[in-house]
Image (cartoon, rainbow, N blue to C red):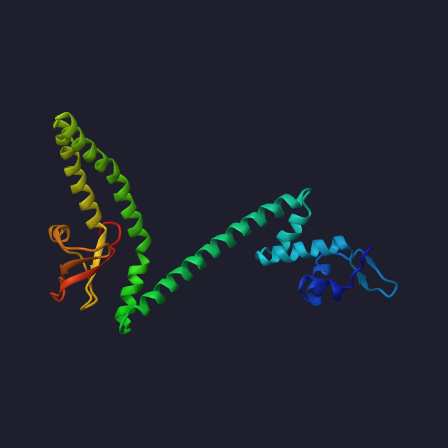
Length: 241
């Protein structure tokens, strides 16, 4: 059966000899035996215990708490729970890092498309990237709620042509008009626009935004700050402020 000296144990666990000796004096990790010369010798089980102690220390648990956990009848249950919590925390951290990486790449790609780079253009791109997911969710919400309305429209037209019955089309109008108003008000309450001239973020009137010529990401508007008239980039405007 393998035996380890204090130095060997410290090396295998990525710590220092002084740390192993300190755990001995605290009674947390006692050597299995002493050599004839008085050297501490640790067993394979001691090595496993030391690795557990190091793991718990990485979780910033105080030594007194570690000592109490290891004295439990079933310390593995507590340690297993701590491992699961650490795994969840690390996965959340990785997810956050990946999201930041995606935003950095979006910003990098956006800068490549700029003819000239300025602090204002970087700020505009960052603002666009920040609200992209929220805008996408809102677009999908509009599409999903609009599918039944579109289905009713085609059904009413076909029914009118084939059967000569017009009232389903009237029913569609009674449904689609309020739906269009509600969706439009909700949409324009949550978006704003960046002026490419002065780089200010502004909110147009509902009437101007509704009737403006537009692309999926921009609308032809008049900036309320500098008076620029042209396509302005759509961004997330917050929770209806």
